[in-house]
Length: 416
Image (tube, rainbow, N blue to C red):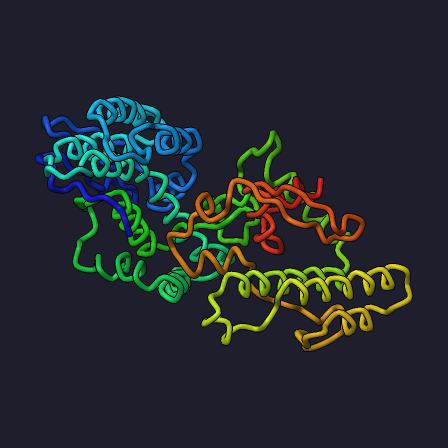
């Protein structure tokens, strides 16, 4: 965990203060005694708003500083002027967040001020260390948002109709260290009413909001099947779509439409074939990424094995579509590793987490912007394109790993 703490910064403080009707305000207490009180909202609303903040352009500028500024070039001597120029550029970036994320804007101002007070230790690497520290501070908002999004993913995805206790138990099962910090039982001794909490850092704020969320049952967080963002259903009934407008269309309108298309067009046997393909591909990735000493715990699957299975599945699929194979015979022919318990198309369900879900569950700091390269050349093995090379972007790679568990919007855009 790399979150930055700033409680030691003079009189500057960050508070979460109870207003009324289960709502809380974030209070920014400045060193000069002035306070900014942000609009009150419920813990669920605060969490969803934090997960929705768009850091795209800000993150791009931070990355540009790292990639292009001469301070980080490999050389023996670094001029002091390079650090001064880097600091001048770095201090301009927090203003990009002033309106969309006032909490991070406040936090960055305090932390950058502290970073600039670092004492020169006389080492040749001091200028470089000072630059790294400033970069670390600048990355804090989107890094902590990544933590939050992963926590929401494992806690609320597919958990829309369960109790708050079951949601918390799921979090505790996947991320026990996180659950220990945001355990709602830690707030048992705090009387309700005008509660006020001093918060150490941005991540601490989100975990406090999560603990407060688990202490109530008036609101629940659900995920929209169409846009894949989180929302608060207005009733206790199962709710698949939010009230947002995405790409110019209400999620409810377009989501229900494509859900109907998906159900009507989906052949059970072909669906299971694609699920098997995803499993084989995930197995291939795990085998390739594992160290030789770790492979004894895995099912062997190299490129030749995957190619053999894919070719067999392609031929069987063609026969099935031509009516030469029944659904049961088709499934039996492609199930070369005996994954299915039944070959009845309506019953042969294959339920397994996607590679994306597995990565998120393994690490709560999993960041797709870091994990996936900006682009990658791969050999296309799909029918009709076998042997052709194609370039996959970071989004393509992400969607590939999410296939089988993704938003209707992503699925529609990719198919289109």
